[in-house]
Length: 198
Image 1 (cartoon, rainbow, N blue to C red):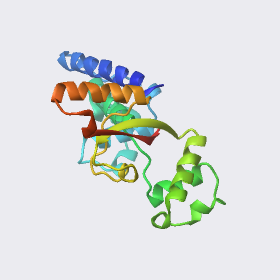
Image 2 (cartoon, rainbow, N blue to C red; image 1 turned 180 degrees about the vertical axis):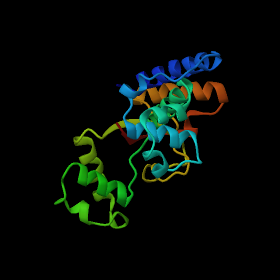
Image 3 (cartoon, rainbow, N blue to C red; image 1 turned 90 degrees about the vertical axis):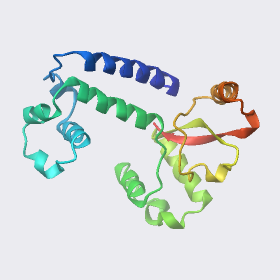
């Protein structure tokens, strides 16, 4: 599914959310037991409420987890948040994420599995992204940054772009739209390619 298609679905999900919230009778559907795993139900409760922890929830039945979630609107708000996060998720170069990835694909003999991430050079990073791509974990996308962001800084900026684009042409069209709305020039922006989590 392309990023544009994901954005379209997100738009309709948010519209549907407003519709559900306006309903008076908005009970939770037991059909969610077939759509979400127990682990996902626990994640929803933890996302909704800060006064619970995982160990407290493992003792609850699936029905009790649904009762805690409360209604369909809470489930949909969780799904919308997951979609938003997925649209703009880039791979993180944390040791834990790297270890988990190599464990998951059972490639423990690879040199990057045993080399600390803080010692990686540009070749190592490129190699890791290439492996992620070959395993279907990432895809190449385009993002708009302010012109002062250099290519080597695109993952390090404190505020990552909120939207990615499937093609450079789509990103260029968005720059044109932004320039028309804000009266800024195209030279105020730069388009970089990024690896995005699929």
